[in-house]
Image (tube, rainbow, N blue to C red; front, side, top):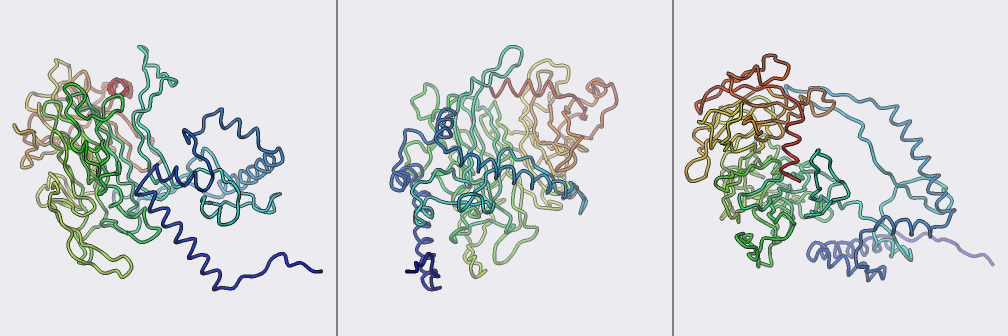
Length: 529
């Protein structure tokens, strides 16, 4: 008697099955968003009958699991890896790296990025073909798979940790202690930030980006359609329960300042169940660099803005980069993704129809202190009109030592911020109230190679990390320092002449001198370890 091994299912049945699986998957995703780790453990128990004390596998756990895998399976895995590796090498040989300047200051290119590990899926047993596959627990169960061991390819994790540093600057890797972890969806793109600074009371601030892709638009991504969560900044920056798009404040040991620590004020939302207790300030897109005034406790944030070159009647204002001000104690919301600049409102937007709706409310949002678009800014023309825009906070200069390269006294209490795309630094005086005097913005130095970070050295100079002229393939990355112009020659180790840049009205001329890596590196380690 013949046996039917497989029959074709009709289109209606297939559509029904797809709809059921999609509906079930969307419900689970929404539940995980709402309940977080608790929901993940519930589903792990429900689908896999697995609820260990911890989900992260140790090296010993991995070795034990591998030892239980059949030798034939291991051979299959190694076989597939070798095929993928051979193909990848040939693919690599067929591609070339390049970079081209498409517009003045705009460089595009492609680069080979080393991959640390790769996986492969062998369907049907003995490698009839090689393919890649992503499989969720739910779809695996629907397909009748009895047990699934997997990691989530859409889930990244950023970890802030401490390490001990010896007297000879040796980092002890086995001394790692995790302070805080911030989950990220990082397979789509972008905005992770990650700057850290100490507040005057000894607590620590960590900046986090909105972890939302800008690749489909230049305005304020708020796409609520199924499958588009990576394009919705409301889920992160505007979500008080999420750690992304925030400034997070913690004790140096990672605990929450909750009022129980002597002499330490609690975080602004401790006790409010709507908020993650670490949240200090929120509503940021990409607060890539921050600076704390050690005298006042004010925090200044360089917030990189969206790419829209012009306003759109359906969407709202054009893009701006911003310098934001967070007062001592925090508790501010800086608007993203609903408002930008001096609280210019975006419109609600229907992504399915392409129609704009009402203006979103900016009530209670903190407007940016400085904001500027592509091209020239009418309010702050000193920032120029060449290149893109990438605002980064630098330092508040409060140096009181007698170092050889200390800046003139007129700079004490001055905020230096960096413009990565425009290759300059600018200054804003800090007023007696602790806020910035936005009427006195002035250029400090120019002709740099994309300044990306700054710190004050023990000699009184401001040290800059310069990324280099391009996005990739940089051979001109360097450490430089801002010093009084009269000492520029001696500030350059080669004895050569540095490139002076005329300062504005805030004080005497400064100069930029090329230096070496050592001093900034040691200074950074001393502060962050």
